[in-house]
Amino acid sequence: VLLSSEFMITDHTVAKKFKQRWIGPYEIVDKRSKATYKLELPKAMKDVHPFFHVSQLRKWRETEQVQPLSELDVPEAIVGHRRGRGRGGPLFLSVKFAGRPVTQTELIEEKGWPYDTDMLQDYKLRMNLK
Image 1 (cartoon, rainbow, N blue to C red):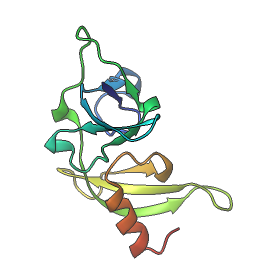
Image 2: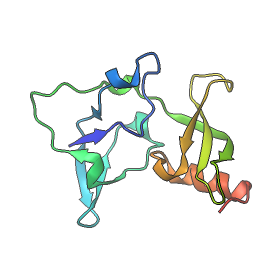
Image 3: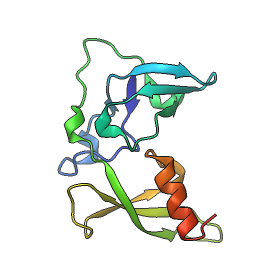
Image 4: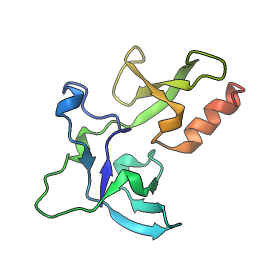
């Protein structure tokens, strides 16, 4: 199957509208429910949580070209956060990626966190976030 790159941080030199929308192909290892599948991801994506909702997956056809794995960025640490507007607004996390200086972080909304959930939970515990 192909995996949606909507929440994946990929090559930042390319405008969003020109990026590939799907990456892969990946093999389905386990079906947890009608809507949740576990994928076998490469070692370079070890920080990405392997369980995905069916809305993030698409059947792969051999004629499709896909994005090479080497263009994917791997998160190294969560270095900060901020809340969106309003009471109980969304939580945005400032994420440092491997191979980049701390000054080049990306803001990612917690709701769409596509990476290792342990990293997210550890950060929330350290910062006393709910």
